[in-house]
Structure formats: C-alpha cells, structure tokens
Image (tube, rainbow, N blue to C red; front, side, top):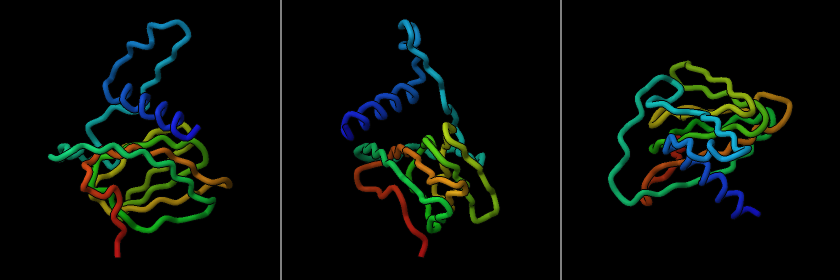
Length: 142
C-alpha cells in the first residue's frame, strides 16, 4: 500500500509540475491545480534548480497537536499539501502562514523557519523535495 500510495502521489506531483490537464478530458476525471508559482509563500522568488543528479524525495510528516518543530531551513525547492489538521509556519523575520487541510504550500528555500501544529488534531502534510542526490532536504539550526 505504501509504495502504491507514493506512486500515486508522485504521479500527481508530475501532473501538477507539468501544468498538464490532459486527464481532465477523460470522463469523470477532475484536475484541480493546487499551486503554480515562481515564488515561495513568503513572496521570495524560487532559486534556480541546482546542477547535479536530480533527486525527488516525498515525505509524509505527522506533527502531533501542539507540537512545535525545530528551527530549520530547506536548501532545495519543496512544496506540500496539508492532508489534515492545521499548520502554522513562522520565519525568523516574523512572517506567518496559516495552512488548513487541503491547502498547498510552496515552502521557503534557505530561510530559517519552523512549523507548529495549532489545531486539536495532528497536522499531516505530504512534502515533495526537488533537489540533488548529494543535498540534504532539511538543515536544523544549531
């Protein structure tokens, strides 16, 4: 089940990334674009993709209600969809984004930030990272 789910999520990611709506012509298929942007949620332009062997990572992250994540940054472009719960994301310069179930986020790149599950139930987010094989997707601040 896990491999099949990941394959379906990856297929959806590539469908969104390509901007294709070819499947929308098939009976009963509904395509909803969740995000299309050149900027992260803090309005900064996304960086160029790095040189090197591309690597896609997809993580399922569950944050217990009331839990605050460590301050961290992502050196690669990443985007996600909050499946359930509520998530609040903060940058060190005071910007805040509130995310609700079903909403997409294009994350900040190389910007220190943290998230917290602010609802009564865990926040569950699927995040897609587009980096290279030799680059970590998350760096924790010391």
